[in-house]
Picture 1 (spheres, rainbow, N blue to C red):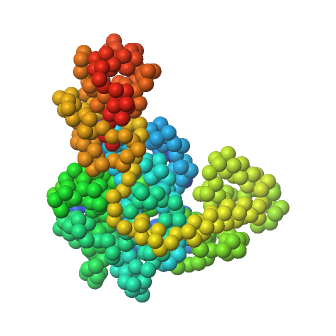
Picture 2 (cartoon, protein in one colour):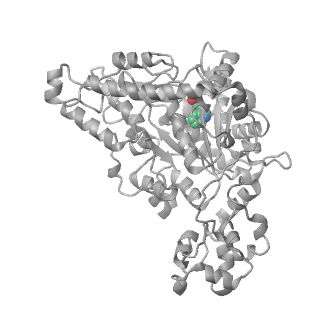
Picture 3 (cartoon, rainbow, N blue to C red):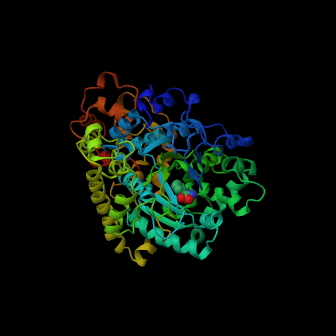
Length: 568
Ligand code: TRP
């Protein structure tokens, strides 16, 4: 695992200081620059004989001179593709802003890399809209535990941020990239996978799931075609290594996976299609894409070109995961086509037990005597690795690691522990899966308005003072109602305005009322408000409670209005 402490400054601080030095951005993809990076294999310090290879359709770890498969070198991938490693400072900021302890997959580095996640946190902080986008290529009917990871993580992000989510099922991609699969097969897999995904517990009010074959049309198709016009074959070939005999469906597919990141591809979500055309305001809503690192080449194309759309979109932010280790051990990736490599969500309790006992690579010693004497190696022990994915308790993980290392805990005991945890995970999933009816599937997959709350307590930059008068009441909303597109886009345009200095005298209450969503209580002081509103200073007013000032200057302005005064 990489050493995050070697990064002296958190990436978001560096970016905040000097945007021009944003090291996170890879070189532009024009002129085949990606060919040298995306598809050329990753050279890590440890790789000699065969380099590791990662693209969206095939992944293989490096092999050393003796023919041993090595672990994936994720630090090398991040370096090669110029992504930012997730560091402790970013996680601390996440926790400060959301009030949620980072997910164990963040704490333990399974989600290890990002592009501009910090900018999404900035938006969350200010209560500005964004959405989540993830997807799956439905290549078979049943998913394995590795497939569930990005979805479980995305569900957690959705719960924390309370934002809309779109899930793209690329049945077209699988049809184009896999031999021996028909359009009908791919559509069927998409439905079956969608039911699996629904079992992960996504909130239906905030989640839209779609199959490309069924959904792509309308504004999505307009985006996809417009984007494809911006995308020369050169760039696509550079990203994916296509050649003259590649079928043209494959060549055109990336523009679809990219167009899915534009908010305007889903006008129904924002209820925002007044004249039948894609709206500029909606295009300005960015997305955060949780995905495995192998999907990154798609989104480099997206990030390099999204500002060139007629209605430009901000660069999508990304958060990348490693691959879940195959049962056979480090360097392997769970594969749907190899039943011994993975635990499937349809496996019985017995299957789980058998697979872990029989196939899980062990970091234990050859004999019990040796194990007791020298201890095991938890870092390569697959049952222990799986426990780090699924057991939340940090102290318990440390206890297991220490006990295994010291030889106090035996391989069989570690396997038993892992079997129990995995059986529970799979069983819980199966119980929920049984409850997903065709009717429920239809509900998630129907284009419709979504409802979400966003940050209940944002710090908003102060809006320009002239803009306040008269407009206030029409903007006010209570937090229990869904965000409206109008409110969304107002918030959007406010985002563009810079934090202002607090004016002196009579304008103060107006600024307060219009600029904060957070409750203003009798305890709230000016100093606090300065923080919330991102203002420069309030000078001598700092220690004063806010409410009396508010009340005396504008007697008609109720506390309730001050409390829900912001838009979302
Ligand atoms: N291409 C992905 C796959 O084969 C599916 C996908 C589409 C996706 N859009 C995505 C995955 C966004 C992650 C994020 O699995």
